[in-house]
Amino acid sequence: MGNVHIVTDSTADIPPSFVEKYHITVVPLKVTIEEETYQDGVTLSADTFYEKLAGSEAIPTTSQPTPQEFEKVYRRLYKQNKDSKILSIHLSGKMSGTLQSAQIAANEVAPEVHVEVVDSKRASYAFGIIVVELAKLVQLGATFEECKSRLQMLLQQTSVYFLVDTLHYLQKNGRIGKASALIGSLLKMKPVLSLTDSGEVYAYQKARGTKKAFSIIKEALQKQYGNKDVHLGIAHANALQSATNFQKDLEKLLHVQSTTITTIGAVIGSHTGPGTVAFIVTPVEDGER
Image (cartoon, rainbow, N blue to C red; front, side, top):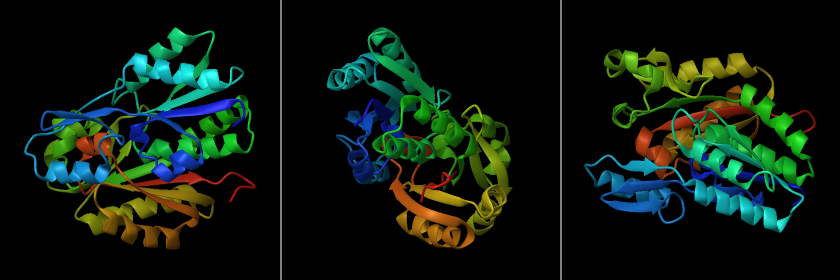
Protein backbone atom coordinates (compact mmCIF):
# COMPACT_ATOMS: atom_id res chain seq x y z
CA MET A 1 0.00 0.00 0.00
CA GLY A 2 2.95 2.36 0.15
CA ASN A 3 3.33 5.21 2.61
CA VAL A 4 0.03 7.04 2.09
CA HIS A 5 -3.37 6.22 3.58
CA ILE A 6 -6.55 7.87 2.28
CA VAL A 7 -9.30 8.39 4.87
CA THR A 8 -12.72 9.87 4.20
CA ASP A 9 -16.24 9.70 5.66
CA SER A 10 -19.43 7.98 4.55
CA THR A 11 -20.92 11.14 3.04
CA ALA A 12 -18.51 10.73 0.11
CA ASP A 13 -21.00 8.12 -1.15
CA ILE A 14 -18.25 6.04 -2.76
CA PRO A 15 -19.44 2.71 -4.22
CA PRO A 16 -18.46 -0.15 -1.85
CA SER A 17 -16.59 -1.89 -4.68
CA PHE A 18 -14.32 1.15 -5.02
CA VAL A 19 -13.75 1.34 -1.26
CA GLU A 20 -12.53 -2.24 -1.31
CA LYS A 21 -10.58 -2.07 -4.58
CA TYR A 22 -8.68 1.11 -3.73
CA HIS A 23 -8.27 0.45 0.01
CA ILE A 24 -10.09 3.61 1.11
CA THR A 25 -10.81 3.95 4.84
CA VAL A 26 -14.34 5.26 5.43
CA VAL A 27 -15.49 6.59 8.81
CA PRO A 28 -19.31 6.44 9.06
CA LEU A 29 -21.59 9.24 10.15
CA LYS A 30 -24.83 8.39 11.93
CA VAL A 31 -28.47 8.87 11.00
CA THR A 32 -31.48 8.67 13.32
CA ILE A 33 -34.85 7.78 11.86
CA GLU A 34 -37.94 6.66 13.77
CA GLU A 35 -35.92 6.94 17.02
CA GLU A 36 -33.39 4.36 15.81
CA THR A 37 -29.77 5.37 15.19
CA TYR A 38 -27.70 3.71 12.47
CA GLN A 39 -24.21 3.95 11.02
CA ASP A 40 -24.40 5.31 7.50
CA GLY A 41 -23.55 2.55 5.02
CA VAL A 42 -22.67 0.08 7.78
CA THR A 43 -25.85 -0.80 9.66
CA LEU A 44 -28.15 1.05 7.25
CA SER A 45 -27.90 0.68 3.48
CA ALA A 46 -29.10 3.40 1.13
CA ASP A 47 -31.92 1.22 -0.21
CA THR A 48 -33.22 0.42 3.26
CA PHE A 49 -32.96 4.07 4.25
CA TYR A 50 -35.17 5.25 1.38
CA GLU A 51 -37.71 2.55 2.22
CA LYS A 52 -37.82 3.80 5.82
CA LEU A 53 -37.97 7.42 4.68
CA ALA A 54 -40.99 6.74 2.47
CA GLY A 55 -42.87 5.30 5.44
CA SER A 56 -41.91 7.99 7.95
CA GLU A 57 -43.36 11.43 8.53
CA ALA A 58 -40.38 12.54 10.61
CA ILE A 59 -37.33 14.21 9.07
CA PRO A 60 -34.23 12.10 9.87
CA THR A 61 -31.43 13.67 11.88
CA THR A 62 -27.72 13.10 11.40
CA SER A 63 -24.58 13.35 13.51
CA GLN A 64 -20.84 13.31 12.87
CA PRO A 65 -18.30 10.77 14.12
CA THR A 66 -16.63 11.61 17.42
CA PRO A 67 -12.97 12.64 17.58
CA GLN A 68 -12.34 9.36 19.40
CA GLU A 69 -13.66 7.39 16.43
CA PHE A 70 -11.29 9.21 14.10
CA GLU A 71 -8.40 8.81 16.52
CA LYS A 72 -8.95 5.05 16.64
CA VAL A 73 -8.79 4.90 12.84
CA TYR A 74 -5.66 7.05 12.60
CA ARG A 75 -3.81 4.98 15.20
CA ARG A 76 -4.82 1.71 13.54
CA LEU A 77 -3.47 2.88 10.17
CA TYR A 78 -0.27 4.09 11.80
CA LYS A 79 0.29 0.69 13.40
CA GLN A 80 0.02 -0.92 9.96
CA ASN A 81 2.90 1.22 8.68
CA LYS A 82 4.71 3.60 11.03
CA ASP A 83 6.36 5.37 8.08
CA SER A 84 3.02 6.25 6.52
CA LYS A 85 1.16 9.55 6.34
CA ILE A 86 -2.60 10.01 6.33
CA LEU A 87 -4.62 12.29 4.06
CA SER A 88 -8.08 12.68 5.61
CA ILE A 89 -10.62 14.30 3.24
CA HIS A 90 -14.11 15.20 4.41
CA LEU A 91 -17.54 16.70 3.91
CA SER A 92 -17.75 20.49 3.77
CA GLY A 93 -17.15 22.10 7.14
CA LYS A 94 -20.11 24.38 6.38
CA MET A 95 -22.44 21.37 6.45
CA SER A 96 -21.19 19.22 9.32
CA GLY A 97 -18.95 18.99 12.36
CA THR A 98 -17.22 15.95 10.81
CA LEU A 99 -14.23 18.01 9.71
CA GLN A 100 -13.81 19.42 13.21
CA SER A 101 -13.91 15.93 14.76
CA ALA A 102 -11.24 14.75 12.34
CA GLN A 103 -9.04 17.75 13.10
CA ILE A 104 -9.33 17.28 16.86
CA ALA A 105 -8.28 13.65 16.41
CA ALA A 106 -5.38 14.62 14.14
CA ASN A 107 -4.14 17.07 16.77
CA GLU A 108 -4.44 14.39 19.44
CA VAL A 109 -2.29 11.83 17.60
CA ALA A 110 0.35 14.35 16.45
CA PRO A 111 3.29 14.37 16.14
CA GLU A 112 3.55 10.59 16.36
CA VAL A 113 1.00 10.10 13.57
CA HIS A 114 1.14 12.43 10.57
CA VAL A 115 -2.43 13.34 9.56
CA GLU A 116 -3.50 16.19 7.29
CA VAL A 117 -7.21 16.94 7.39
CA VAL A 118 -8.74 18.55 4.30
CA ASP A 119 -12.06 20.36 3.93
CA SER A 120 -13.33 19.25 0.52
CA LYS A 121 -15.96 22.03 0.64
CA ARG A 122 -18.20 19.52 -1.11
CA ALA A 123 -20.69 16.77 -0.33
CA SER A 124 -21.50 13.28 -1.61
CA TYR A 125 -19.69 12.03 -4.70
CA ALA A 126 -18.65 15.61 -5.48
CA PHE A 127 -15.74 14.84 -3.19
CA GLY A 128 -16.02 11.07 -3.37
CA ILE A 129 -14.83 11.18 -6.98
CA ILE A 130 -11.76 13.11 -5.81
CA VAL A 131 -11.05 10.62 -3.03
CA VAL A 132 -11.21 7.76 -5.55
CA GLU A 133 -8.78 9.49 -7.92
CA LEU A 134 -6.31 10.00 -5.06
CA ALA A 135 -6.66 6.39 -3.94
CA LYS A 136 -5.85 5.28 -7.48
CA LEU A 137 -2.75 7.47 -7.37
CA VAL A 138 -1.66 5.89 -4.09
CA GLN A 139 -1.90 2.44 -5.65
CA LEU A 140 0.43 3.62 -8.40
CA GLY A 141 3.02 4.49 -5.75
CA ALA A 142 2.53 8.25 -5.49
CA THR A 143 4.20 10.12 -2.64
CA PHE A 144 2.28 12.10 -0.04
CA GLU A 145 3.34 15.38 -1.68
CA GLU A 146 2.24 14.15 -5.11
CA CYS A 147 -1.15 13.23 -3.65
CA LYS A 148 -1.53 16.65 -2.05
CA SER A 149 -0.64 18.37 -5.32
CA ARG A 150 -3.17 16.30 -7.25
CA LEU A 151 -5.78 16.94 -4.56
CA GLN A 152 -5.46 20.70 -4.88
CA MET A 153 -5.86 20.50 -8.65
CA LEU A 154 -8.93 18.28 -8.37
CA LEU A 155 -10.52 20.56 -5.78
CA GLN A 156 -10.09 23.48 -8.16
CA GLN A 157 -11.24 21.74 -11.33
CA THR A 158 -14.07 19.42 -10.23
CA SER A 159 -17.61 20.71 -10.73
CA VAL A 160 -20.97 19.65 -9.35
CA TYR A 161 -24.56 20.56 -10.19
CA PHE A 162 -27.61 18.90 -8.72
CA LEU A 163 -31.37 18.77 -8.91
CA VAL A 164 -33.72 18.00 -6.03
CA ASP A 165 -37.35 16.93 -6.22
CA THR A 166 -38.16 19.31 -3.37
CA LEU A 167 -36.34 21.89 -1.27
CA HIS A 168 -38.25 20.64 1.78
CA TYR A 169 -35.40 18.50 3.14
CA LEU A 170 -32.65 21.07 2.57
CA GLN A 171 -34.77 23.75 4.19
CA LYS A 172 -35.86 21.67 7.20
CA ASN A 173 -32.31 20.47 7.90
CA GLY A 174 -30.81 23.94 7.58
CA ARG A 175 -28.60 22.99 4.59
CA ILE A 176 -30.25 25.38 2.13
CA GLY A 177 -27.23 27.70 2.44
CA LYS A 178 -27.13 30.71 0.15
CA ALA A 179 -30.24 29.52 -1.69
CA SER A 180 -32.36 30.56 1.32
CA ALA A 181 -32.89 34.10 0.07
CA LEU A 182 -34.64 32.70 -3.01
CA ILE A 183 -36.71 30.08 -1.23
CA GLY A 184 -40.07 31.65 -2.11
CA SER A 185 -39.45 31.82 -5.84
CA LEU A 186 -37.52 28.56 -5.97
CA LEU A 187 -40.47 26.60 -4.61
CA LYS A 188 -42.30 27.39 -7.86
CA MET A 189 -39.33 26.50 -10.04
CA LYS A 190 -36.82 23.70 -10.68
CA PRO A 191 -33.57 25.13 -9.32
CA VAL A 192 -30.19 24.01 -10.56
CA LEU A 193 -28.13 23.89 -7.37
CA SER A 194 -24.39 23.88 -6.85
CA LEU A 195 -21.86 24.57 -4.12
CA THR A 196 -19.99 27.81 -3.43
CA ASP A 197 -16.21 27.92 -3.06
CA SER A 198 -16.75 27.87 0.70
CA GLY A 199 -18.93 24.74 0.55
CA GLU A 200 -22.48 26.06 0.85
CA VAL A 201 -25.49 25.23 -1.33
CA TYR A 202 -26.54 27.98 -3.72
CA ALA A 203 -28.96 28.34 -6.63
CA TYR A 204 -26.90 28.36 -9.82
CA GLN A 205 -29.93 29.09 -11.98
CA LYS A 206 -33.69 28.67 -11.98
CA ALA A 207 -35.64 26.76 -14.61
CA ARG A 208 -39.18 25.73 -15.37
CA GLY A 209 -39.11 21.96 -15.31
CA THR A 210 -36.48 19.23 -15.20
CA LYS A 211 -35.83 19.24 -18.96
CA LYS A 212 -34.86 22.92 -18.95
CA ALA A 213 -32.84 22.51 -15.74
CA PHE A 214 -30.81 19.68 -17.28
CA SER A 215 -30.21 21.78 -20.40
CA ILE A 216 -28.71 24.45 -18.14
CA ILE A 217 -26.43 21.87 -16.55
CA LYS A 218 -25.30 20.52 -19.93
CA GLU A 219 -24.54 24.03 -21.14
CA ALA A 220 -22.51 24.81 -18.02
CA LEU A 221 -20.49 21.59 -18.23
CA GLN A 222 -19.81 21.95 -21.93
CA LYS A 223 -18.59 25.49 -21.36
CA GLN A 224 -16.30 24.38 -18.53
CA TYR A 225 -14.84 21.22 -20.05
CA GLY A 226 -15.28 21.53 -23.82
CA ASN A 227 -13.20 18.83 -25.51
CA LYS A 228 -11.24 17.85 -22.38
CA ASP A 229 -11.19 14.21 -21.32
CA VAL A 230 -13.17 13.83 -18.10
CA HIS A 231 -14.47 11.39 -15.52
CA LEU A 232 -18.22 11.60 -14.92
CA GLY A 233 -19.94 10.83 -11.66
CA ILE A 234 -23.71 10.71 -11.16
CA ALA A 235 -25.06 10.34 -7.63
CA HIS A 236 -28.75 9.70 -7.13
CA ALA A 237 -31.16 9.38 -4.22
CA ASN A 238 -33.37 6.43 -5.15
CA ALA A 239 -33.56 7.73 -8.74
CA LEU A 240 -31.53 5.23 -10.79
CA GLN A 241 -33.66 5.54 -13.92
CA SER A 242 -33.20 9.30 -14.03
CA ALA A 243 -29.46 8.91 -13.44
CA THR A 244 -29.18 6.44 -16.32
CA ASN A 245 -31.14 8.67 -18.69
CA PHE A 246 -29.00 11.69 -17.84
CA GLN A 247 -25.84 9.59 -18.23
CA LYS A 248 -26.57 8.87 -21.89
CA ASP A 249 -26.97 12.55 -22.75
CA LEU A 250 -23.81 13.62 -20.91
CA GLU A 251 -21.71 10.89 -22.50
CA LYS A 252 -22.77 12.20 -25.92
CA LEU A 253 -21.96 15.77 -24.92
CA LEU A 254 -18.60 15.41 -23.12
CA HIS A 255 -15.39 13.45 -23.73
CA VAL A 256 -16.18 10.98 -20.95
CA GLN A 257 -13.45 8.43 -20.22
CA SER A 258 -15.28 6.73 -17.35
CA THR A 259 -18.68 7.00 -15.68
CA THR A 260 -19.60 6.06 -12.13
CA ILE A 261 -23.22 5.94 -10.99
CA THR A 262 -23.52 5.81 -7.22
CA THR A 263 -26.32 5.99 -4.66
CA ILE A 264 -26.57 8.90 -2.26
CA GLY A 265 -26.41 7.40 1.22
CA ALA A 266 -28.57 7.92 4.27
CA VAL A 267 -26.83 11.01 5.69
CA ILE A 268 -26.76 13.10 2.52
CA GLY A 269 -30.16 11.67 1.52
CA SER A 270 -31.59 12.95 4.81
CA HIS A 271 -30.69 16.48 3.70
CA THR A 272 -31.54 16.32 -0.02
CA GLY A 273 -34.50 13.95 -0.01
CA PRO A 274 -35.36 11.20 -2.51
CA GLY A 275 -35.26 11.98 -6.22
CA THR A 276 -32.09 14.06 -6.03
CA VAL A 277 -29.60 13.64 -8.88
CA ALA A 278 -26.10 15.17 -8.80
CA PHE A 279 -23.70 15.51 -11.72
CA ILE A 280 -19.97 15.59 -11.02
CA VAL A 281 -17.23 16.11 -13.58
CA THR A 282 -13.48 16.02 -12.99
CA PRO A 283 -10.68 16.28 -15.58
CA VAL A 284 -8.54 13.33 -16.56
CA GLU A 285 -4.87 13.83 -15.78
CA ASP A 286 -2.47 13.87 -18.75
CA GLY A 287 -1.44 10.31 -19.52
CA GLU A 288 -4.37 8.84 -17.54
CA ARG A 289 -7.39 7.14 -19.05
